[in-house]
Length: 32
Image (cartoon, rainbow, N blue to C red; front, side):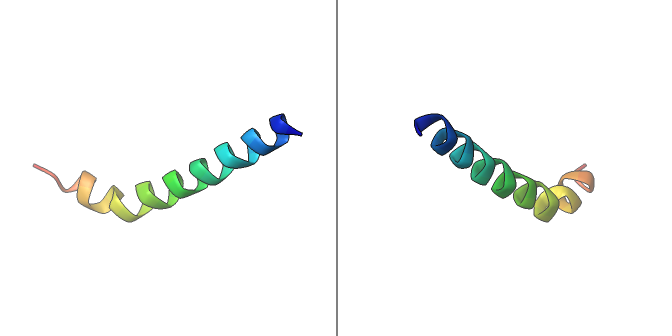
């Protein structure tokens, strides 16, 4: 099922993005 595979890929990408945002949100917030 190619659709399920693409969805899984997107989900993994989204999760990684969330982790990245959480890890860098502090730096983003304190940027002048």
